[in-house]
Length: 332
Ligand SMILES: NC(=O)c1ccc[n+]([C@@H]2O[C@H](COP(=O)([O-])OP(=O)(O)OC[C@H]3O[C@@H](n4cnc5c(N)ncnc54)[C@H](O)[C@@H]3O)[C@@H](O)[C@H]2O)c1
Ligand SMILES: O=C(O)C[C@H](O)C(=O)O
Image (spheres, rainbow, N blue to C red):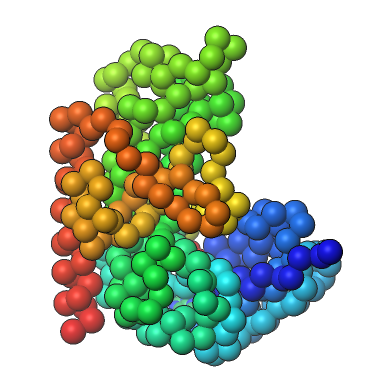
C-alpha cells in the first residue's frame, strides 16, 4: 500500500537554499524514494511573487512523489499539520560578517515562529534549524515552544561534518564515502571543532584511523581545522553568496538519517540539546556525534577526549553561552 504523504515545511523557501532544497525533497532525497511528500513553503510578503514562481516550477517539474504544494506568507497556514520543519528563513551573512552579526534580526523571527510551530505543527514534528546563528536560533525556538519536546529541535552542523569528510577525502585522494566518523563539536561558527581523532577510512586492508593514513598531525591539528571552520566564509568570498546547494544537500542528509537511521557503526554530527555529555554545559544546542534509530538521535558516549580537544570543546561552548546571553538581550 502507498505510504501517506509527509508534510514538510521549508521556511525562507523563496531564497537560495530553498530553491536548491525543495526539488531535493520532492525527489525523495530527504525522506526516501518511496515516501510521498506535501511541501509547505513559507516566505515573507516581499518574496511572495518569487515564492509563487517556485511553486510554478515544482508543478512544471512533475515530481511523482510530490502530492501537493502550499506556498504562503501566512505562518499559521505554513505550520499547520507539518511533520518535518526545515527552518531556513532569515537573513544570511555577507562578506566580512560573523554569524553572530545577523543575530538580532534572526532570533526574533525564531521566537515568533516557535509559537506557530508549537500550536499548529503535527505532534512529534521534527525541527531542523538551518538559518544562522543556527544553534542559537534553535535554542530560542526551543525555549519559546516549551511543549515541543527538546529531542525534536535540532540545528544543522551536518554541512560542517560533510565538509570535514570532503577535506579528508581530497587529502588522501580517496572516495568521500570511504571516510566516516569525523565529529563536529559545538557551534556552527568559526569556533566549531572538527575532530578526526575517531575517524576512519575503509581500505582494502580494513578500517584504518584517519591519523594513521594522513600521517601529518601538524596539518590535521591546524590547517584542516581552520579550513573546515572557515569554509562558509570562503564560499561567501568566492560566490558573493553563502553556500546553498551543499547546505540543502546536508539538510536532506540530516533529516534522512534522523528519520531513517544511521548505518551500523557510523555516527553523524547534529546540533542537539545538551544533556551535559562530555561536560558540555546543559541548556545549549551544541553539535555532538549522534547515532539515530527509530526516529530518535542519541549522543555517542564514551569517546576519549584529549587535552587539545578538551580546550576546543570548551571554547566553542563558551561562545554558545555568550551567544545565548546576546540572543536574550536582543529579545528584551
Ligand atoms: N547551518 C548551515 O549550515 C547554513 C548553511 C548555509 C546558510 N545558512 C543560513 O541559512 C539562511 C538562509 O540562507 P539563504 O542563502 O537561503 O538566504 P536567502 O536570503 O537567499 O533566503 C532567505 C529567505 O528567507 C526569507 N525570510 C526572511 N525572513 C523570513 C521570515 N520571517 N519567515 C520566512 N521567511 C523569511 C527571505 O525572504 C528569503 O527568501 C541564512 O541565515 C544563512 O546564513 C546556514
Ligand atoms: O557561513 C555562513 O554564514 C553560511 C553558512 O553558515 C555556511 O557555513 O556556509
